[in-house]
Length: 153
Image (cartoon, rainbow, N blue to C red; front, top):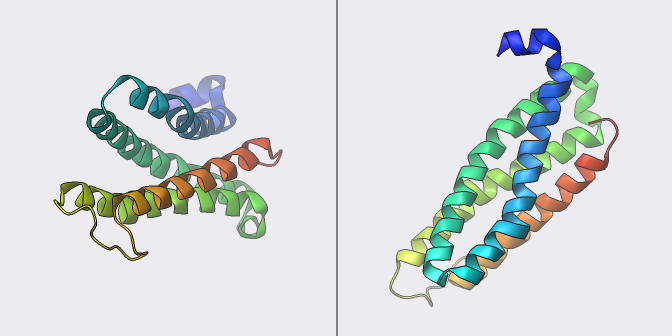
C-alpha cells in the first residue's frame, strides 16, 4: 500500500478513491440496486439481499468515514473541526452509525417477530422503522451530495 502511495497515487488519490467508494456506494445501492432487487425478486428475498448489502455498505462507510474525517483534521488541523466539510463527514458517519447499530437491529427484530403490529418507540412496527431508516439514508445521501460538491473536501 505504501509503495502505491510513494509511486504517484498519493494521499490525494487515496482520498478521492475513498470518497468515491463510499458516496458512490450510497447512491448506487439506494437509487439503483435496491429498486432493481424489489422489481425482480419477491419482497422477502429482495429485503434479505438489500439488508445484507446495506450492512456491508455500513462497514465500508465506517472505514471510509473515519479515514476521511481523520485525514481532513490531519490536513487542516484543529480548526478543521469548525469547517463545514468536517460536519458533513461527521453527519454522514453519524447516519451510518445510527442506521447500522440502532435502527437496523430493531428492523431485524421486528422481521423475526410474529406480531408485525408490535409498537415501537414511535408507535409503529416494521413500516415505521423502515421509514425512519429510509429518512436517515436520504439525509446521508443529501449530505454526501453537498460533500462531493464542496471544493475544500
